[in-house]
Length: 182
Image (cartoon, rainbow, N blue to C red; front, side):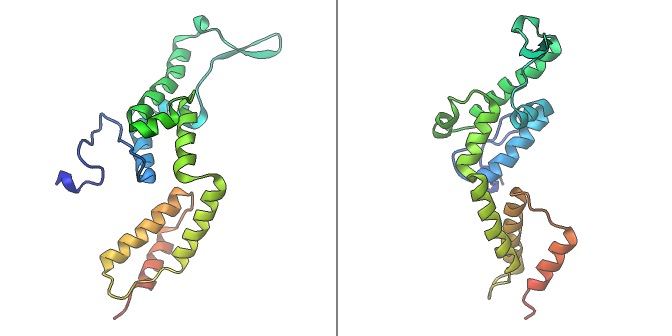
């Protein structure tokens, strides 16, 4: 049974999923779920960057000295350190060295994202190509319904990872229309 799992041996709810440079989309979703399961603050540090306590002095906002941080501020600031630890623990050596000089978990995450997904322009082009593939989707000669569903789901999942949303009814109609009636 374990040999048929897509993430292989060693998957654990206590360990981050390992990323070896392949299947980034799959890893990215699993990492987000893993981090949010530990604490939403960890994922917040990745999305928004590290929390740096500040205060206002003479009309200017300046960083608070570490010695003046409250316990709540220290806890919130620590989420970035936890996120960096989780990310680096989940990477093989090649991927680790790609992000090892990054200063924050957000910078690490963004570096991996651009490396494995491309820039916004690349994502836009990929999204347009996938939309065309979705619109032209048909059942292939000799293809089973299970194979059609797998291919269709693959396209939809990639589009959803690029922020394309679908209505369930639209998807159901699309898949039913493409099935071979023979």
